[in-house]
Amino acid sequence: MKSWQAPVEVKVTAGLLAGLPVAWALLDLVPVLSAGAGLAIYRMPALALILGGVVTTGLVLKMGSARIGGLVVAVVFALLHAFLLLGAELWFNKLFSGLSFAGYGYAFVLLNSMPLKRHILGAEA
Image (cartoon, rainbow, N blue to C red):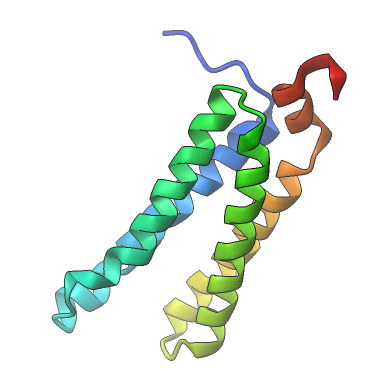
């Protein structure tokens, strides 16, 4: 099996944008299984997973718009997790929101890095 030939920064960014929503959905299992919350709680993690998946697909296919879309997705969900951090009452929700805020912030920084720009734009970066 041939591996994906890309810089580490691109792989980490793709992992963050696709992995953080999956972890968020797994964390949402706690209120669904214990408190009997409805499945509407999965709307935002599903949206984050869809948008992160689109950006990740764009990074794999070396589409120029994937970088700008990734910047928008990272900012929107970083702000969302910052507000969730302020409003959460349970300690593990606060911890996860803080780590997700940091993860989306790191993805934003990596989307601005030169290895990722070279991956997408080639020699003209």
